[in-house]
Length: 286
Image (tube, rainbow, N blue to C red; front, side):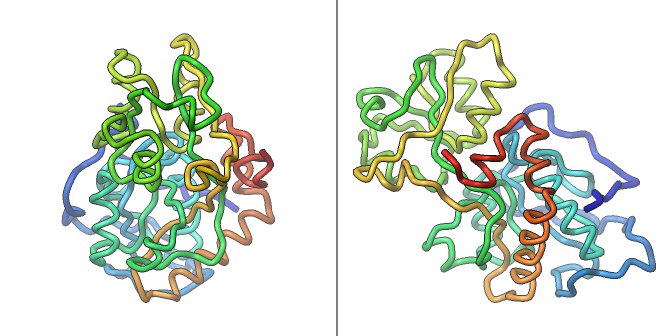
């Protein structure tokens, strides 16, 4: 698969956790850089013809974009760009907080939600989710000490991004008073660095990327070990992109893209380009 090269690019955000609250803004329609003779691999309607509008939950290595048109960074940024190119669409990004992004796709204000969205039954009630997935994911813990079990978190203050799928389960496991919520993932790691919290619970992608990007900080990160007692916090999850509820043609196109990109090795190559283990994230091998 060939990544689409944009003529116009916007400067990426300096910090991976920066996101805008509220609704997707009404950006001017981007100037298309799609060739006039482009033949789409799939055809489906979007809110603005020729444009794929995406609510983006920023946080590397998942996704990092600026408002408007421009090449995306991170796993989702590269893969969504690739998907849009094959559909002959220009991507229009709308970086939002996690809760706001979920609300925007639920209200039908954007075509897609990106930023490593975990497939859960409640989310399937308010947006379309694919049959397939493109990577596995798990809850990861980042702290000075290596944390492998939920019981090791008892009595600790753990930072999380508000709206993360695992927050209710974590609150139930270690007590709501021990779980501190933040608007962005970047804010959680900053408080960890400052010593204001004991650990960060996030997707293992975020935790592993943070540690690899801050080798001198002395933090360790990894997924929690499988434990039936805390299944919602320790099992492997499937990751997808959310699309507007009822727009099955878009969802079908995404499923087709996932199949092709897994089979030809595109997903594994993108995951590995961020220093991550494709055996775990693509194949699900712990």
